[in-house]
Amino acid sequence: MLDLAGILGDSIVDGPGLRTTIFCQGCPHHCPGCQNPETWEFGVGRKMDPEEVLTAIHANPLSRGVTFSGGEPFAQAAGFAALGRLLKAEGYEIAAYSGYTFEELLAGTPAQRELLETIDILIDGPYLAAQRSLELNFRGSANQRVLNVPASLEAGQAVEEMSGRWRGEY
Image (cartoon, rainbow, N blue to C red; front, side):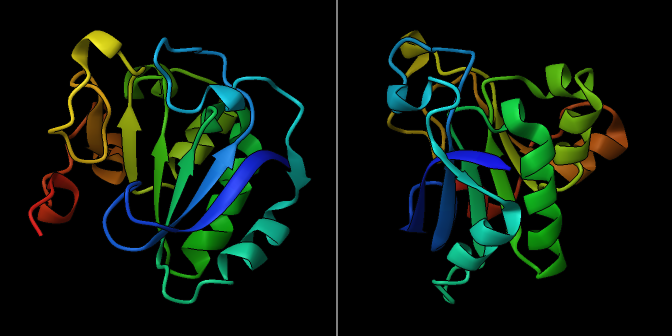
């Protein structure tokens, strides 16, 4: 079961192209300047199972990418991993935002590793207001990285995504 703050079926800011963004409810990071502080509290969102979320994603047939946002998706890693498996089976590209770094997640719980294995792109690291930049694509602060997760898992270390789609080269 997932605890969600909301679902946005037509985002153009949470990754390239038209995407569906799933906002989870609950975040342990509480980054000063967070754009979604209403998602910090745990246990107060809408409860949905992964199949229900998949049905909501199907409501926009033009969306072929899904972004897990926050709150903190890796605080609900098992539920988001289940959703990720359903999405991958249907050919969706999956991205996730996390206040954790890839290195922290790699050393994290088995469920966090399982979630990593279902996603294509990770935007990692906490939002740091002192490093805020409006020049960055799909990131809020310069410390955050856009990572190719399959390549990172294979290498055992963070590998940046180099495709033009994710670097803003349209």
